[in-house]
Length: 281
Image 1 (cartoon, helix red, strand yellow):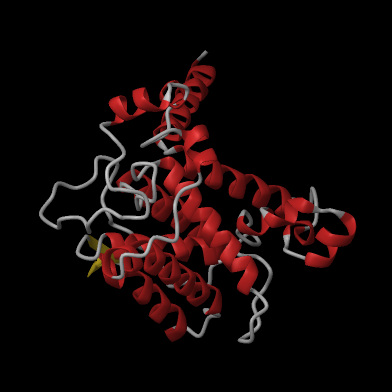
Image 2 (tube, one colour):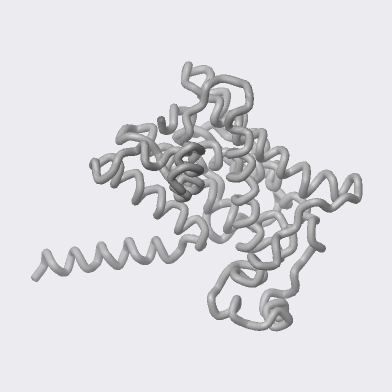
C-alpha cells in the first residue's frame, strides 16, 4: 500500500544518512539524542545524567563519568543548536583527519582526543571561576571545534552567512554568545582545554622536541590504524599499515595544517551556521 511504501523509503533514507557518519560521531550523536529525548519525556530525571562526584564515590554511579557529555538540555531551540553543532563539528573533525598521536590520524586518535578532553573537563570543573552546571556536552563540543580550528586555520566557514576562516570559528561563536548576554563559560572552558591539547600534541613536539601524548596501544588494538573499519581493525598490525598506507607522522606529531587550496573534504564543507545561541542548560 502507498503509506507503507512511503515509510519504507523514509526508513532507508534515514539509515543511509546514519551509515555515512564516522563511527565516533555516530555513537556520540546517537547517545546524546537518545538520553536527551528520554530525559525530556520524563523516563528519568536529568539529574541522573549530571556529574556528581559524591554519588559516584558513595553509590558507585559510574555512568556519571560519561552522561554529562551526552545531554543537550531541555526541549527548546538551544537543544537543537547544540545537537547540530555536535553533529557538524565532530563529523567535520573526524572525517577531515584528526591529529596524529600514533594511530595514523584516525579513529583511535580521535577517541584519545575526546578522552583527554573529557578527563580534563572533569578535573578542572571545580576550579575557581563563574558557576558552571555539571553538564559538559557543550564544553566537549567546543574542545573539538577549537582543535579543528587549529588544524584548519584557513579553511572556509561561515556563521549565519558571514564568511570566516576556520581559525576564527570558536571565537566568533563565543563573541556572539557574549553579545547576546547568554552564559558562555562552558564554551570558554572547552576552548581552553582544546588549546592545552593542541599545545601538547603540536607545539611541544614540533617546537620543543618533547613528546608527552601518544594514543594508547589498547585504543589502536581496538580501532586499528587510520579510520576505523571492523575488517581492518581485526588484521595484524603490519597488514593494517599496508591497508592504510602506514601510520603517517611519528607518535606525538601532528599533520601540518590543511592546505587552503586543497579540495574540500569528501564528506561536506565547513558551512556551519546557526550559532551563538545559548546551547543547553
